[in-house]
Amino acid sequence: MSSRVHSIHLAPGRKIPTKSVPSVEAEAGTGLVGDRYHGTKHRHVTVQALDDLAVAAEVLGRPVDPGLTRRNITLDHGPIPTRPGERMTIGDVELEVVRIAAPCRLLDDWLGPGAMQALRSPRGGTVFRLLGSGTMSVGDEVEVHPRTS
Picture: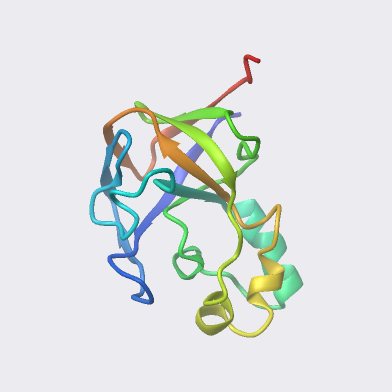
C-alpha cells in the first residue's frame, strides 16, 4: 500500500513557526521555494510519517502536531527510506536520502519537555536532496524505489 502526502509545512526563517501549505514548488538541487533551507547544498526536504509521530506521542504522553516538528512533508504512513542513496518519488518529484534527520533542540520549546528525545531516530524523519523539480501537493502519492546498488 503506497503512502500519500498528509501535510506540507514550510519554515520561512530560523526559529519562525512553520506554515501549512497545500502545495510547494520543488527545485532540483536547490530545495523548496519559500523554505529557509532553499538554496542549501543538500538539505532540501525533510520527510516524516504520521505513524512515527503517533509512537512519539505515546513516548511523550501528548499529541505531536506535524507542523511543530519543523519537518517539511508528513506522509500518512511509513516506512520512509533512511539509507543514503535510497530514493522515493512524491508526485513527479524524485528525492534521494542524505541522512536521518536529527531532532532539533527547539522541539522541547515548540512541543514541550521531552519532545527532542521522543523524536529521536527512527521517528525524526529523513533529510532528502531534490533530484527533480515540480510541484508537490497534499494528497500526492509517494513511491519508494528499491535500492539498486
